[in-house]
Length: 145
Image (cartoon, rainbow, N blue to C red; front, side, top):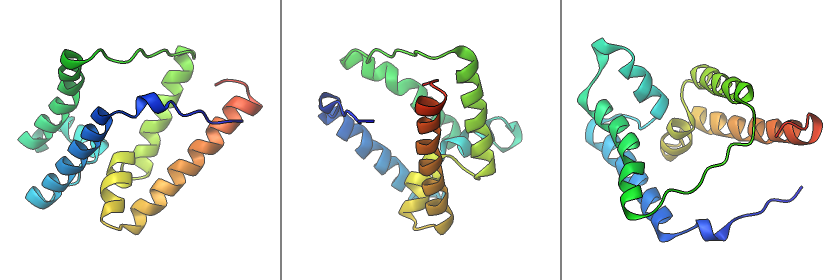
């Protein structure tokens, strides 16, 4: 197995996006003491009595960002070469794992690790290891991916 990195994909716009994410994370944490975990923010939107304006704006920003990006550059082509049932199963497993792990990769990987949270470090390592094992089994054992 070899990993090929498309070095053309690393552009200054990628750096700007990462910086914006980092700044938003810091502003959210220092400004109102909240964590920029997407699953937590999104799930709170499903509980109408607890919705705050910053949560709506955060999710709205995630939706609007690709639209604004497309005004400056074309969006990259995305090719999905797997079956719809496998995609649905993967999505359900990700949702289950997010609830089981009390957060998503953005909440643990970006925000929690930045706060040196042992729980977030454990969650991030677990997600990465299980991701590696899943891809290995899917590609080399079952031939699915």
